[in-house]
Image 1: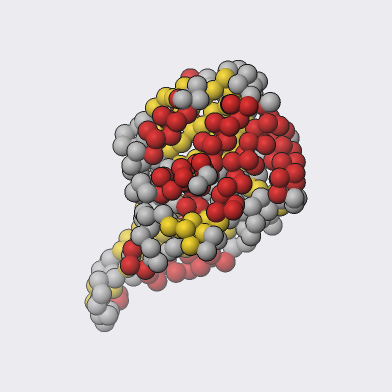
Image 2: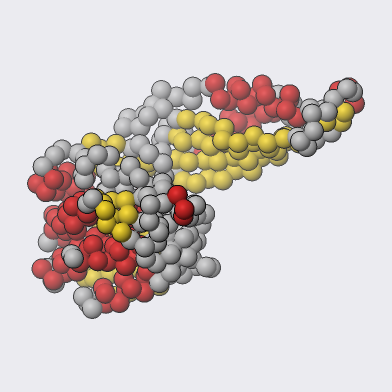
Length: 375
């Protein structure tokens, strides 16, 4: 059994459902201390964060990952226990196999091997892990980034191990992400009997037109290296369950995924203008999940592109699609950031898995990128 396969299985076996780390970081810190790394805990509240460094000075190259996983759901729907790693037909199954314990294990092995080969490497090689990526993402990398900003910790390059690949290892690299902005809207009406609408005020009827206007709007035509911004209503609830009662309130959840042509406050203003024009009595709570970012072509994208061509024999697609990741908290520190990891087809699904062949190649790919940046 290879080192990376063995470590990935050890990590999967730890039931680290967000925000529980379940001892993953202690296991990793103990290994990397043996390679001469300095390990520091940066815990906030119930969330565990680990900062590991080797070397000193610039450039500071960070491997960024998370040890937490999403809940497995009904374990009876899995072909095997989601926290008992099992290899079947060349695939390693288990919750977190692809998202993202494979990359975390590969980071550790790549660091061990790179340090052994280049003990006097230039700059600083670092690993940043959190147990709060799949959950609220408040006390994890978001808080660590605030700490780095106040302490003056600079980061030049950051490789996030999110499963970016679509069909084959290295076929796609994320070089940026759209921003995410969520809203929770409560529209106030007056509850009453459906036979006497003049004595009530129906929040559903009032909210339908402005919500439809927001949903139908084309927010922009895109931005260089980004798709058009998107507004999606994800949930609407109202009513008492009876068909003869006009409800007193309506609650709607919605989300923007937006490109750098917008800032969060601009989108908030646009939505509130529509709601105000409709004359709604409402409350609106905003959650700014992260601003959009883009890593322009430079040393990090070049190193990843060259390494993938040499190691995987293909030219990767470089784009800004997908959801969000903790990279959104590191990019504002001025770092060049990419996301690179295994195939993402099974993430968050029943019977999540990663190809063993890809897993065993992953440390070498990360190590080659490190060689181009730090050797």
